[in-house]
Length: 509
Image (cartoon, rainbow, N blue to C red; front, side, top):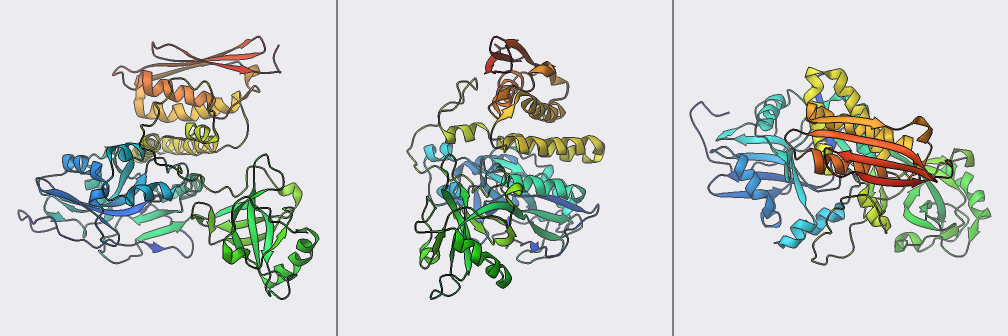
């Protein structure tokens, strides 16, 4: 900091610090904090009250005009002497499936229209504080910078502070990052200083490693004149309801010994036409030999690029048929919408019925909202020091809820109730006595099949629409009873009208 009583203007440029990449074991110990590194654009925000807000990229290029909606909330929270914030611009919704194309649609527009801003909302996730009220903070330990940053009160969209947790929870945080599609975590030491333009062993990036099932849909020969040789494998994931068809997810090199083992198996299932429904890049298809998708294997990779290609894949070997599971395929993240018609988004439905008519609408209905994710992590972080046992329970519940959101295939009423329980635990930790809960569902109804997230969507809607806006809160009631041919579930928030969901079932009279 500068000497007491002296103030300087907001600096014109603070070169962003870069994290070092962990090559060995991740850090542990009480002096380390970890947080999810969401996919987005690095941003340094220079806020000068009464003058302007400047947004610069990690390469010091101006992004100010592309995100005009961030100026007002930044100026509103700034002290008179200004501030400089370091963070990431993230397209809202990426906490469930990383979609870099979505944020690219905004950054590619010099001055977005109001319709574009509403259609593709962007959040600024602030992770560090470099300047505050006329004084540099880069020489302060991270713990002190973080305390000053939290004091600014950025807790609602479109500007949030991130939610670091102690490194003792790194295993759970890595699992959450893997489920949400993030490429890694950031680990920061509480005593680490900010080194503009440099790196430090006190700020590390921890990559998230994914291991997924793939099917081999072809290969490129190691020698084009000897097509029976194997150089790289062309990989895919099965297309739903289309046997023998694959989505192309990339190619991977294999060791010399593995090439010899695969050559015979691939020759036995060779076919003339490619099994891929989407285009294989020219470089991979030039000398490709195609195969019936009968060989399943495991691939380790660090993320997705280009909307559907694995980043840095590593072949782990073939799988026996008994070890293949339908929920472990390498499914690429969903692409951003293909069109950008300047229309208003449809209003959010009051009731989850009728079910969405398209796969895209169904997927959107299953997303955990960005503000819920941030609120949950902030609540857990706040309990770490005051009630660590409860904080850990809530963190595990958050991980269970994330898995429920990502579930593939059908679900049961019992599974849905478990997800509802995890959700309500997190909301009760935030609302306290304002949220009361009453659940009345007989165990005999638990096996009834339901659409994944069908009950949870109704519960969340009741909490957000009927209880959260009321200062006194209210009672969330969930009850189910057997009816002819199935079950009727009623969800009521406060004194509002109940949401009724009918679940047909052959298991009940």
